[in-house]
Image (cartoon, rainbow, N blue to C red; front, side, top):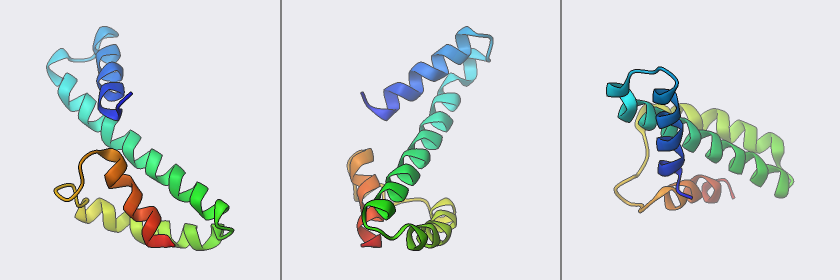
Length: 93
């Protein structure tokens, strides 16, 4: 299941439980961004433990996360979440 469809289902559930229906797309976008960031963080932390470098990975995340929040991502270069998710893990190696 794609991240986008998961976010849309959660947003739809919010609307069904009383959230503003006009804001459903905004909810879906925010949820998708949050899930994307959490998934990338989980993958980065897992990569740090798999590679035996958890402390270095935490330092990398501490430097990379603010940069990602300010600059965004290279979304024009990548097609889909997986392609957008893999480069940060490869940069660390």
